[in-house]
Length: 258
Image (cartoon, rainbow, N blue to C red; front, side, top):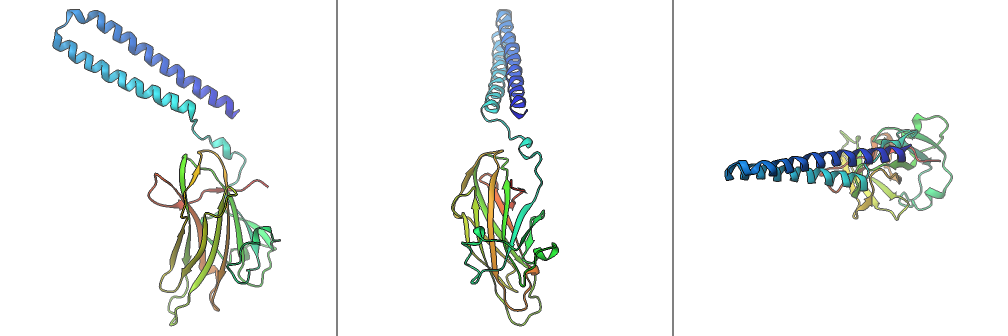
């Protein structure tokens, strides 16, 4: 169905371009036949107008050819899929930076999260996940780029607690993000406290992605939380920006295939 739709779109684009081209060229011939009855100044003016119209036609033809060679990403790629992240919850590793084995470990349960921000106590809102402490998460979702080109990923952290405390408590969280099964593109530690509530970890490299092609975003998060600090006050979101964009936006994730 999608392939037939692309063929129809391509055929219409070529047909439209052909009609425009035929009409414009015919107009050009008619103009040349009658130009002997006009003054030189009139001839120059109409020739300039014809040149402008030809330039517009060339631009339209280039656009039609580009559309055929690089079809616009179809929303059918996401048909039948639900928006959201699949989140697996684990007992926090000790130390928290030991994330390597979590992806292959048995989880304590999983849930679907549809928001952009997820806090480290989010699992308590779902039945059947019994963990004695704040969890570590494996967050997975399909990202469908709407533009072809280089993309930069980042992880944002926000700490909502610690207000009014006399002693500054530091929150340290470790992240590991893979894109399309490649080596981690974002990996390291984020820090926040009662004075600095936000932190960002930006990927040092760019990832080339094609418009309309789903890619798996696979992230691990685990935190060292001081006594008295609840995971409910520590939240994360996975963000991305295309090379043509100036700011990051939350990844619009879709549930990965089983």
